[in-house]
Image 1 (cartoon, rainbow over the protein chains, first blue to last red):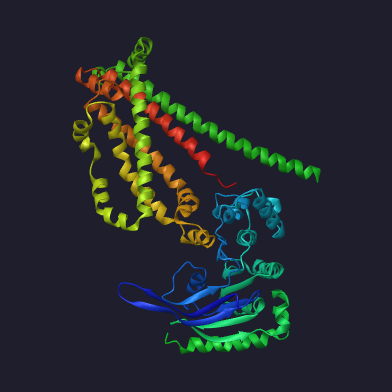
Image 2: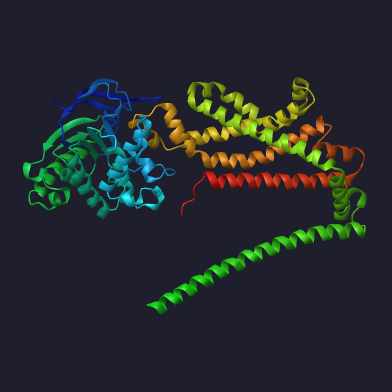
Length: 259
Length: 270
């Protein structure tokens, strides 16, 4: 059975004067350990889709189902990473990472030990007591990843987490996140407008068209690229052909639009 | 290498020295203004440039201070007023923050109550004085209520708008970790609003003094506000000016205490 099933999902936004259809009849599944990207122009409802999957917004129509091994498990099964790290500036890095256990009332010696282990994994164990404003952008995003991983989620939702970083940091962090996800056997759903990033990181790419947000096409990344780290994927000889294919589809989408 | 280090060290020492000198000059000028003000006042009064009956003089105020301090009556008045002010300040601020939390908790409540808050905020609270005195009786309770009521509504409005200004993505992070509304308030909304709360504390220090002094004008038999109104009635302006100076000193002390609190609560970036 699939880890995540999105079934006939639609979402409307209402304002006093008008309404917009943000998402129109979206269907897809995500398997255990799979990395899927949602690619699309701005305004295609990517972030809305991610918020609905995370359970932060209730969709107007359709269902989301996530396989749960144990229904009594109270800790969220999904971790969410945003464009920016949104580390709490008044909490030390360690306390930021421990936010998950604190909220689900599991704050104890064991979870503190686990937090330090995860911080070691992301290479931040020596600055566990520092505050977010003392860290660089890349380090902050790694701390945010640690905060997500401590809850041991089955699925990671990534809302353009690399978009606010400079190019070098972004490439390095892509490799790092990809390696962490493989190591912990996590599935991930990445929202992005960056074609190269989508190809470099994913197993499958879902291309959305805008107004209303609808699935245009699904691309499967070939086997040999999937197992490479993102940085090497970008260098691979078969990378340009898949990039071109997606590029053409995306350009076609933009020409369809009246504006 | 070692030599280079030494020159760097010297440069740094020069910088620190420059800072020290700058600070010393500021202190000297502050002192100069202080001395100039009081000696000019004394001189003007002695030479009758100003009417000594109306504007008194520093030496008369000082003598009155010695008298009042030695017969102990000064401490009674200071005690009464300072305690009233602290009580009014704390009640007003805490009630304001509590009310702001209530408004944040229920959007429909805040929408319903909004026009009433606007009216209450616009109204001069001091005008409520007579009604408060009739309702609560002419005593400490009414005076403290005056001190509190003058700051509660403005605190509510300022703190509530700070609660609303927080970046919603912080709430998104907390909710994705499974947080309830109460946890969101405790972990994000409340701590993120500390700087606003501190600045409203600073404003409230001044406001509560206004409320208390006006309250004492109206009813009291003790306190610094009472001394001012008594001095006015018996035409003893030395007493009025003396009380004013004491109030200035204690208001400054309270303000300093709030600043100390700010330093403890808010971590300044290194």
